[in-house]
Image (spheres, rainbow, N blue to C red):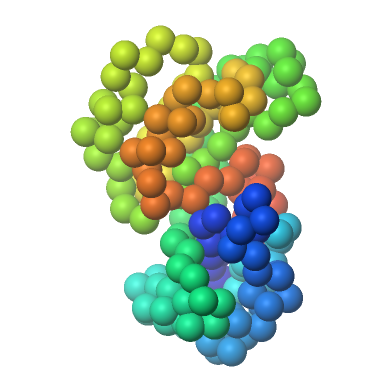
Length: 182
């Protein structure tokens, strides 16, 4: 099976620094095969016969032992990545409108969750929100469209507080990881 693993909070703001060569070496030492990393934020694609739960049981404690700090890990297989891309719940026209309005920033993000989002989480995020950003839920992810920079998005701030173990990737990275998996 082919998987993508996404580590939360690596190499952000000079904290939790891990070189991708060291991450590759770590994953190789766990017995994973055909390992490729993408950019410096803790993305890796690999092949293994292990399932997701088995992977989590070796990656999370092994990561701490190797690097000396914890990083939440989210794992998706090839079919799950294909599904989350194909099921994008935000219309293309809406995305293009945001991109035209401000082509200098990324607008579409995916929150990778370790479990399905609940209605209570969704209600809490959306409660009294009057802005124009859009949050839509998937199976174990949430899609966020920001009309401006994600750093200025109140909806992104709310989502990050509620989905506090999630790791977030922009749409370009999601698609690149999927391409690497194929």
